[in-house]
Image (cartoon, rainbow, N blue to C red; front, side, top):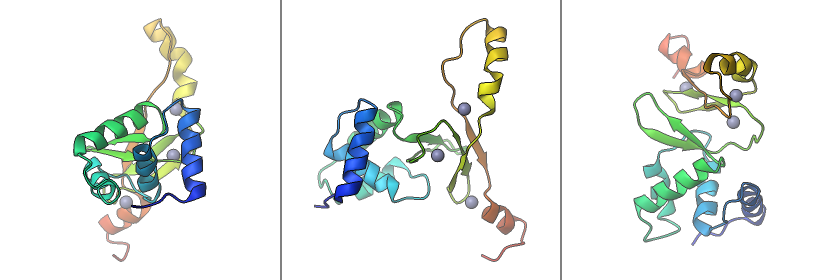
Length: 154
Ligand SMILES: [Zn+2]
Ligand SMILES: [Zn+2]
Ligand SMILES: [Zn+2]
């Protein structure tokens, strides 16, 4: 069985506590797996790695834990244009959005939010109140763009 490194385990546990989520070995393991990935990962891929630590874990358990972590705001759900669902863990706790590469699955932080500035006019339009928003920018990263246009070397 894989043992979480002290520091890592502690900081993930703190993150969960801050978001009022119960700290469980499975949740910590999922965060540990996602944290090692610079790209967004599918539930099936996470399940494969979870099986190394929890021999009898089922895919529905992995789905449920991912959903709970995502609803709690710990991890980000990525909906790919191919309609497959992925997850991503970002250490940046400030409000920001992600540029996701649909080709190599790289994720880049966008430290800007155009929506906040639009909230007043949105509230006027709907005559209600804006509480939150989800933004995901899909595209091709710098490297994938160069490959597509034949400029780069693969
Ligand atoms: Zn890319
Ligand atoms: Zn981020
Ligand atoms: Zn925003």
